[in-house]
Image 1 (cartoon, one colour):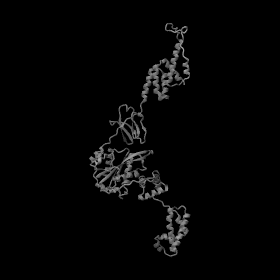
Image 2 (tube, rainbow, N blue to C red):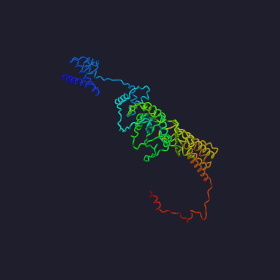
Image 3 (cartoon, rainbow, N blue to C red):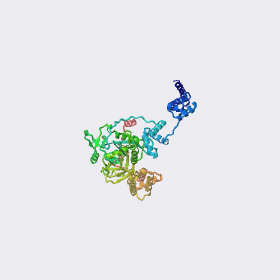
Image 4 (tube, rainbow, N blue to C red):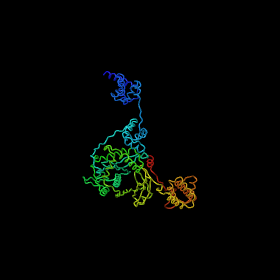
Length: 554
């Protein structure tokens, strides 16, 4: 008992000394240091005071013989330096530190599983290590860079009993906002199917909401991927499949009803607001969003589907499932033997192209942008066109499936996409109007020069000037227009209104000269004439009140 008291006293002294001298030690290191200090004193005590051998100390303490020998060779100061020294171990994933840090900076909520998948996708030589190792490394990066996971409310699900192989699959839709290469938002829609027993998954993406036809096509792709058809499919009450619940007598949408009858599918619809009935596919939708789509850059829909196939093979179906503790791919090898055979020759309806109205300004509104069609399309009576996306281009067809125009598909919003050939050809009509004006005033080089200057320096108002000049030639004679043209050209007044004022001035000068050169007219006499020299003539007078009222008007 006395030995223990001395030991504890010495341990406390050494431990307090470490706390003051080794300021860099954190609390975790100090907690780990205390048992080592205690054990060092105990080894010294057993060896020096009890005279126990190394083998005996090994039996009493459980320490390795080499550790006991090393402790006995150390003095107190050497042991304090040894314990206080911070040991730094290299990690297998240290070369990927910067990449993990960038992923966490981009999205702090990104899971360690998603980061592991991104590393495997980017680095084919990524080491084959346990997922727990990746998790520990990601957590250490989080702590060191202070990139902690934001707290979010979790959604609870009820686990359903296991079903037989080939008995059931669950289907659902999802949507997610991604960022494209220009750092703009791009919304994608996806179809997900999961086999309830093996948890083997399938997912495909598109840029537009799913319709009855595209949903049928997604089913065909999923059945081809899982190499069979399960006994029944579980859905929620999505309008793509169901028109009305009708108290249990479901009214299916037209396209899906035809497909169900042709495939002889057994479909089951969950009640409203009951996600637990198909919790497996609900988790798949969440898994796709948080593990595959989160922090992923959108390049094109084809590339996204290619990346999804790799993700399914590598992660979603290739790793151990968290609930079943089995690999979905290995379980699918068993389950596919219990699925109904899939024949890829099944007839799938072609997608019905949606008609888009031609606007009065000869554009159609598609995907939040305005795509121009050739000038005159609206006035020609074409009211509907049919755009189709093909390899990053928007092909616009008429009702006879004739290609009207091709545009590069724009992923932004509110843009006007136009080809220069779709602009109104104003040149031909202006040339015709110019020739018409020149014919009204033939053999006039001055007029041609005047028009050329207007076209060069005021092309935007060339048509308006031509209209004014055409009317001017009709109203004024050539003898007024010719000197007016000469005056405007000499003074660089290239404007139709200036030409009109000059022509009007010339007309007034001519009329004034004619009046001055004309002989004076004799005064009229007669019963209807007025002679101011007649004494009987009295001029009219105005009242003074009239002038006073005018003066005081505001």
